[in-house]
Amino acid sequence: MNNITDMDFVRWMLSQYSTVAEVEAALSKIKIVTVYFDSEGNPSPTAHWRVSDKQGNSIVIEIMDHGKINIHKNTAKVLTNSPDYNWQVTNLNNYINLHPGISAPQKINGVEAKSFGVGSNFVGLPGDISPPSRFVRAAFYVNSAPVFKTSQEAVSQAFHILNNFDIPIGSEFNDKSHIPDLPSATQWTSVIDQGNGELFYKTMHDSTIRRVELSKLDFNAKTEHKQPLDNGKFTTQDVVIK
Image 1 (cartoon, one colour):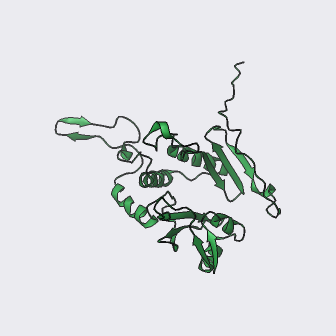
Image 2: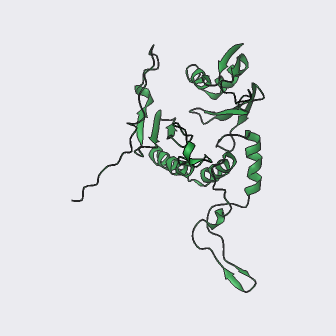
């Protein structure tokens, strides 16, 4: 059995396999070794990855309890951080009252109560940045999304959904004076069109959506090629009024 570090796990999958079924079959031949340990020597409690292929198959792979591998079908179609996937799915039961649209008016005693605007059926949708809340929010936004006719429309919708999960710098720290140089805020947002082999992304400095055509990359190259996602500076584009 081969040892693979959790940091190399994605590279191991992408460099050898093209379908979810192939990855599942190969998991029994490896042991995933944790790289990160906390100050008390404990590994990350849950590490997990969402794996999908062109055929629409999608699974969640979780590494728990010092290397135990759990595989789940990604029925919820979303994934965030801890706790484990089964817990996150079970937690959706607390929000079955939520659905798209506007709540119908009703009389409360002698008061005619009605919605202030659109989206009142989503009142109660958690809005904080914790992983459980993000899981619920993502699941309901994905579930309410229409089916689009073109891949461009689908990619655009995906970015609109992901905009709801931008974490501003500083919001995850108690002390503003001790924010690290590499904050765990949203540094980039990416969308993958697997059918057309395209990667789209934007960064915390530049909201312009960039496109990478994966078919033009040389995956057989002997050396790695690294390129900055952006120039590291806040970028704007002037609008010329004619």
